[in-house]
Length: 133
Image 1 (cartoon, one colour):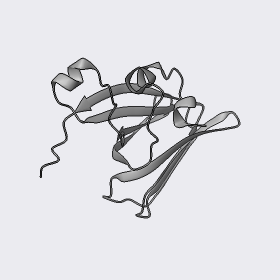
Image 2 (spheres, helix red, strand yellow):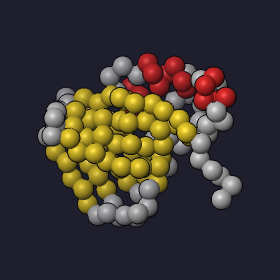
Image 3 (tube, helix red, strand yellow):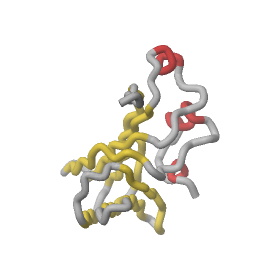
Image 4 (spheres, helix red, strand yellow):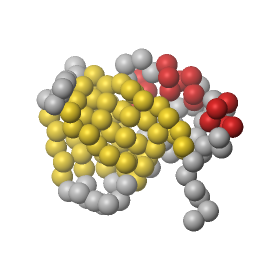
């Protein structure tokens, strides 16, 4: 089961990527937000692949990176082990019984493990990463 099969209403991601939704392996993690409402946890990550046929506006602006805000809601457990400046992680989103679990791992020793009731992508955007420097 892919992470996209776990999120509620994956239409936004599917509209951009079609059937070729990238795995969350080697994703760039920008931040993790803890919200008391819900409670919920939001992962802000750059997807490891750019869509083959991006929206016209993104193509016109020569964007090359897609960023999503992936939220786990109804959170009942958050574990953070270690803290690293390494921002490339593998993020696994899975369904375990009635709960959703999001776990990050990186070559560094930091791990985030979030357990909640459901997950969704609440923002999709794109921007230009300067690959020249």
